[in-house]
Length: 231
Image (tube, rainbow, N blue to C red):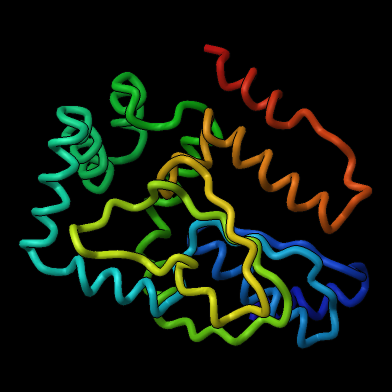
């Protein structure tokens, strides 16, 4: 209903539109683009950041479901990252038991979460909405978008079991006229935070300038980098 309301109101102010989203937000952006297109709008730019299609998401969870496979992931991560991986897992579990602010200082002190108001708000919100997003994503049935998707995929991305692979286009190949694939060094979440976000910003701006040549130049990446280094 919310998306339908947006597409109706956009008739009054949007001759052309750019959309984008990360994770489940990529699914929302895709559906908005499809609805806007059916309403007669031109979606100039559709950015999807490390989002799996419903079919790809179901397949990944099916392959990772057994206890043996989950133990394999934890063992491999422990070998490669050592005690840092244990601290991250403990902090994640604590967040599901205790209020966010009780462990916020502990997590930041150990350097295992993004520091700063925006980063903390994103993590806090993600804890609450992730189960809802996952359920919605699995039920979603996409329709083909006649334009191009700019797809940012994190590299190395999600930790996967031995022998388990993801589709190179994360399942989006059949749902758009064309795919412009770009890689960002990081995992599913870290490429949204400093320092990786500097690279993310550079790639997104270059893609936007290709479809909107009059986009003004910006020092956003440099500003974010300098502000993130402040204590």
